[in-house]
Image 1 (cartoon, rainbow, N blue to C red):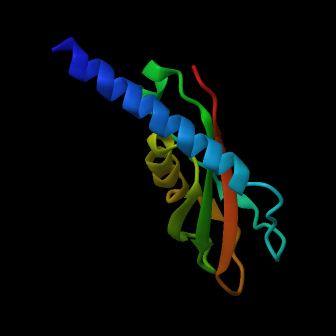
Image 2: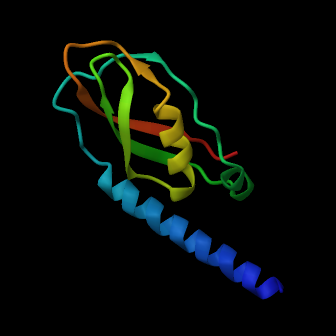
Length: 115
């Protein structure tokens, strides 16, 4: 009974380590082609219980399409720890940005500190 549980934990740790290593290589030097839109309302992401138990932290990078009215139309993960991506995406979809005449695409990074 204990062996399958240990095996799953080891596999999860290996997967998380690999994803984090790949993500850290992909983040370097990317900047948007326009000035960033100011965030009017920010909702903090919920730190997932599994991440808390495993002391997992890291950065989640998201590409967010923001409508002219400031509402988030879509959010897509560009990288980060799979355990943290869903929480980051759920929070960012609730954010409000300043209004503009046209939709924009923003690249955001959310940092989760291991507890």
